[in-house]
Length: 120
Image (cartoon, rainbow, N blue to C red; front, side, top):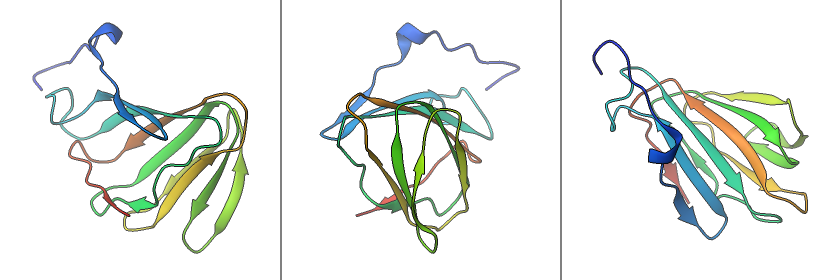
């Protein structure tokens, strides 16, 4: 990235999974950031993403819409709704499941432009 990076919404293609979609807005891979990753996770109703962790960065997850249960190793499951946020340290297993009847929209931010994921 030079001095700034503008990312138009219509240039973002989702990564599609059976449990939902991931949108990556700002990443080192796309040369839109030197130090951070920003994305959105959309969980389908009743679906859960696989348990995983990030060895090289913290994650901040913020619920924009919908209701989820979030699992963090050592803390267990807890409910989250619109406006709730959680920060997860590096190397901590976690995952989320949509407990509602509509899609859950989650903003996700990472403290590295080169987010690494290890999962099941």
